[in-house]
Image 1 (cartoon, one colour):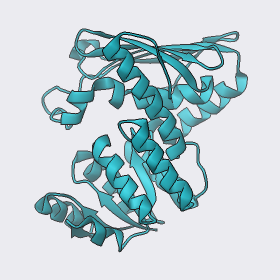
Image 2: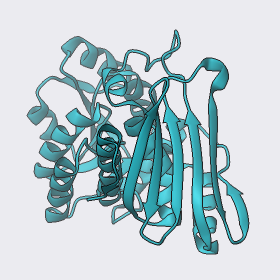
Image 3: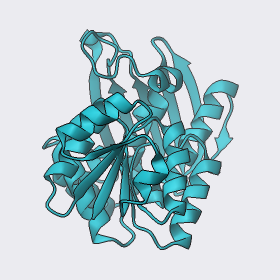
Length: 294
């Protein structure tokens, strides 16, 4: 499958580009970026052709892999889908359900393959845990604490404008939801409050009655970084295991899924459902009220 890589930042270079270049079923044909020098440098690293004209790139590929902020990704993914290209996207799919629905519609109308890359969903040990935990059933809820500290010196994400603007809800939130939703089911309502150091505290009521509580931040003190994710219920407590394997290897598994085709568990439809919860959480955080999920 001939791929075009959209984006020239750290994630594009070190994860998506590396995985596409190494994958036996992928041919990294071109790299698109608004900055021609950066596109040329990244393309040269992986033996691809640089592009600053998106339509020119789309005419040369079967699929696009996008490593750009979600507001930009939403627009470009729609253009690519309308041009008949398969989609390998980063999370979150878009910044609102209107944009997400347009992408889903374009994919469905053209019978395209799509994958949204929720990193842990493409790690074998976590996917096994999700399958086994969902099969057990009887869960009353989940408790999630994810305190990251990405603004430390040397962090490749310290200067990320969209992360500073949208915070952990939109950056870490998709990862949390990608594990919780397959076990506890869709979310009906969301409430949220903000805390110190841009922490978002969420309460999610699932349609089946279970409740998830989650505390998320990108700006925790370095000494207070924490990652916990537990399900609790009739059979006790089940703890999500620590991730195994690199992000590059996980992205390789996402490429496998896209090349295989068909409706996978992390396609744009699932990506849209995640956006709907994030959108409701955003409103709940700003307006301090209970919000129904679209």
